[in-house]
Image 1 (cartoon, one colour):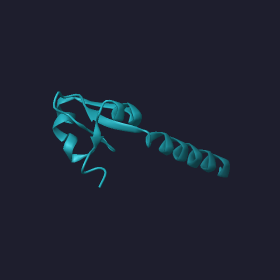
Image 2 (cartoon, rainbow, N blue to C red; image 1 turned 90 degrees about the horizontal axis):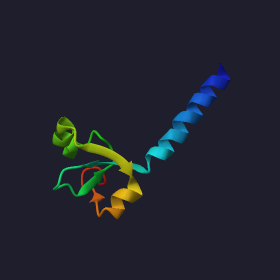
Image 3 (tube, rainbow, N blue to C red; image 1 turned 60 degrees about the vertical axis):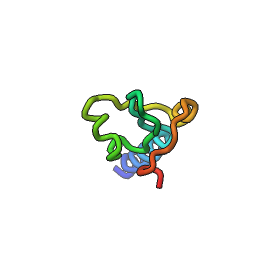
Image 4 (spheres, helix red, strand yellow; image 1 turned 135 degrees about the vertical axis):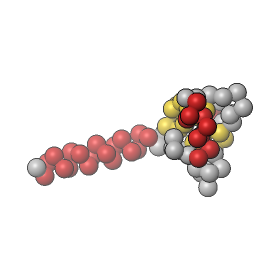
Length: 73
């Protein structure tokens, strides 16, 4: 049982470090920012319309996207 908890904790920790390199963007034509979480209030309308995409942080930067002012205070 202890081994199971240790394995589960390791999986959670390793997946959290991978997600730090993933951001969310709106695919709308006027979108300019990338977001830390999909639940960011700035993405609400985009989520409702289904225009949110998960991409690598480096790709978002190479597209000229800037950090969201709400997510990255």
